[in-house]
Amino acid sequence: MDIIISNSSPVALYEQIQNQIKAQILNGNLNPGSPLPSIRALAKELKVSIITTKRAYEELEKGGFTQTIVGKGTYVSFTNKDRLREVAMFEIENKLEEIIKKAKSVGITLEEGIEIFKSIYEEV
Image (cartoon, rainbow, N blue to C red; front, side, top):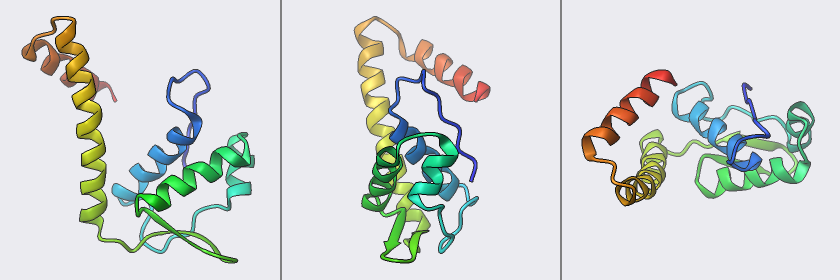
């Protein structure tokens, strides 16, 4: 599994892990039923605490992206992919709303905001 974390990012480590696993599920790199590494194995691979990895897995399960079978491991959920995309879109909309409020408070126009969004979108 391809996960890159940054200690200098303002985003919590567990969120970085969670977001990257979500993205891999939504873009089809991880298919329904695919096993995820054990919490301990992923923590060791990423050089983070087991608690960090556990929290990421718990959040993924709460969101319906994964399911854990006691004694067997954690797997990508068979939940409808459209539903998972809808959940992800809801989260994105909430984050964009926060950003738009901040942008408006400092006088950034809609056109400037769209230009910033396009620029960043093309870079990523």
